[in-house]
Image (cartoon, rainbow, N blue to C red):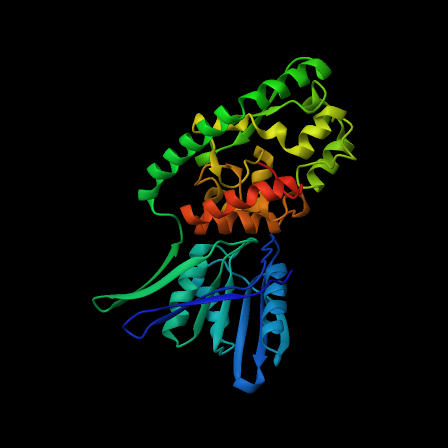
Length: 361
């Protein structure tokens, strides 16, 4: 799956230049590592793509789309038990540049060792991070004595803003709870009258640093809805394929009142309590169920660096209309670039999204 390429450059006063590019979705897979030779005839350059077969194929498609004159060459299987063996094989091709696509049997240790050796040959080395939706990086090159240090920094919010963010969460959630108390009482009474008890539904979700917590909603489904989902193989299969959320038409567990609560997002209001308890923030990635974390691959650990949110970038950009892997890309980019100004913009966009039924609280 190709995506528009975003390019940034970080320059060092010592004339060292690092280019950071997002070059599409790299489904690393677990297949055999291959070497693919390609040429850029107008520039007279030879490039090698090295990594799992599926990821190398994807990388070639992306590069070919960006370079009209890029032509394909042969593909050969590689033995990458050690960086020295990989370097020996790559040197035999006399390339001008090498793309090392991490994943599968090409791990970080082998790739880093091979990359360092190839740089001394005068070969341009590109390390391609695995998984879809890789967050942006800030790259820098600097000198420590006679040594060149290449640094890759994940872009993230300054820690000094965390107390301010928590204060805004507490104040915002408290004000909303006070303003919406009549709505809470009315909805709770309606759920009790039409569906009986329990009034609230609690589900285990993954919070900051992987801690599990119970997310609260007004109940919109029949009692024992989770057990029904687990016991039905077909229903659970459709649930996973639909990005861990069944459509209203496919989900017979939703009651008529529950359907209305979901469409108006009133079922989400009890999560203000999760915000006050410090388990969630007003803005952040939506909290995922434990098995859903696998959709983020190795970047799942980055996702849980921040608290999940009552609303977020995914909600205001389409919510259920956007599935994986695009949702993972949106979430991870938010985590990497989050700021108070961005959060304010998301909050301002949330109400129109809810009114137009394009998002949720």
